[in-house]
Length: 284
Image 1 (spheres, rainbow, N blue to C red):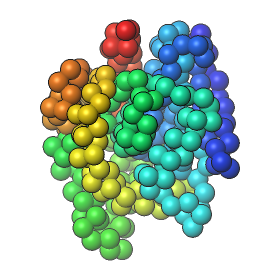
Image 2: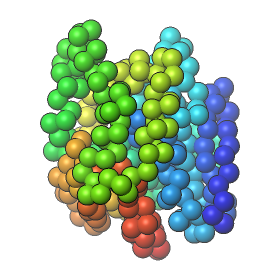
Image 3: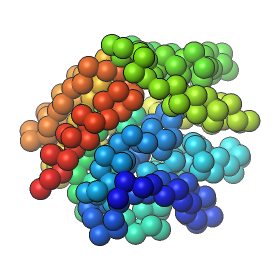
Image 4: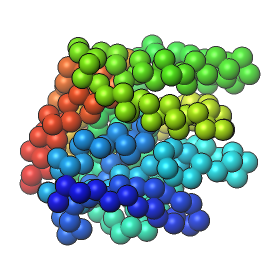
């Protein structure tokens, strides 16, 4: 049951690439990746869960093998990304599912929960933030762009799209960087090097302020619906602080919070530990 199929779905003319594993009759689990990654980030996690769950991991619009249309044909906002993913779940028949959200996957998945609370069986957030106290000072250059969308502020953010920065995202906070495979950041670099990819990412940096603006709505959803919730957090993440993980318990007192001694891309070093935590959490 650990074999993975690599598929494509036509979502109202938008081509979405996704990985699928597990028996369709099992509990459904949707895996949503972050920046600057793709569903490839789940390559180690999926086989560990495929005997118990029906897993689907799409590449978000503009990422990985999914379509990256020109910016004059598709506005790269998190609202639009979430709308495509929402329709994707309907196209593939994911009517009720647990969702694993990481980084950009969090504002995407939380939007699905706001729109369709009845479809969400549980939420696993791996360094997926919904609280202002979870945002580190590492966001300051992007905050400057929110406050002043000047060409200079936009150009300054290109430093976040370099090979060196991508490697740093994968290795910062990891006690032994020899445990981090180069496969992940090398593939991310490949996708980021495509014509137009940098402009797409800069647009999303700009739009991220709208995710922060939705934090109160996300938090109200947590309070009103009390979804089953597990936070699994790389505690040395330079972008999303441990305080952001602890904050979930403020609105969901029964939420479980687990910290791991690693960085932002926690699955690179702790896939087995996170899979074990998920299996225990989702057992009932």
